[in-house]
Length: 318
Image (cartoon, rainbow, N blue to C red; front, side):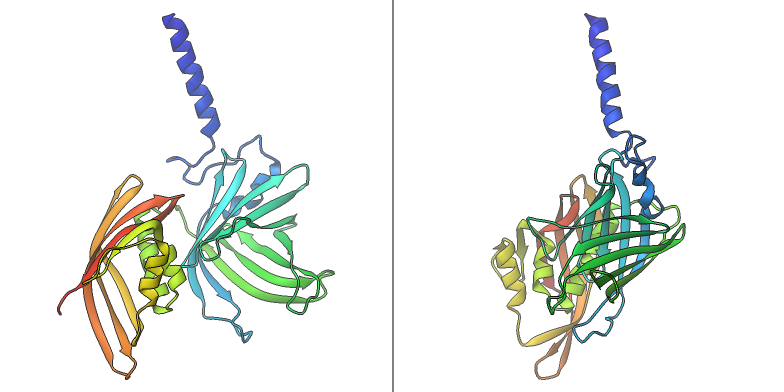
């Protein structure tokens, strides 16, 4: 009986290890391609890891906006059978994709998601690696109703980084209109962003969204059941109430804002940090007022993303 139990434990351990052998681990922070996956699983292999990138999109007047800094991380998931990527952008508009090569269709299928436009049905692209480029398409009409595609291009792929272009093309690709371009430089000997780095990035995103008065982006930084504790105010709970609180400010325009953590402590899927914040507002009468305050935040990791659960702050006299 004892021998049988030992044998079962060994068998269970072998099965468990086999199920996660190619998952991200301490030894392989971005996972590994599973040898049982289609050979195309290695199409994205040069991108696996973390890149520091500069992203530019079109303004409504068709000029190019100022570059937006971001990190772009690729890793193997589903025990090396698929690829997942995540972008963390300075302006707080984060996104990611799940990438699977389906052998029966002989092409990649890519499902995209973002924190600024959550949807029950994810956008999807499909395509293949063509020579030294990865090309993906999604049907999309032009503003004037012309049939066409939104085309994604990964190109100039090498060990030092890659370039990316998003463009609208007509059905025979005789016309192209680029709308988004990204240049990425690969970090050397990188590991995944630590929990501390992720929290610091989200904190910077808060400041960016606040300065843009993007209250939707601010609310997305909190958990659905979050509570905030503004100075001289009752506790405010929940997404809509928190969004309303931030959007109800009037009489001034924020022109500077910075969060300065003193300490960030990670405790599994929760964390807490405290520190100072500072900034400057421009009143409607043109005067400018600087301020400084202190804060404490309790964070929760939800679906792999750090979000604020409890947020308390108040001003300090300079």
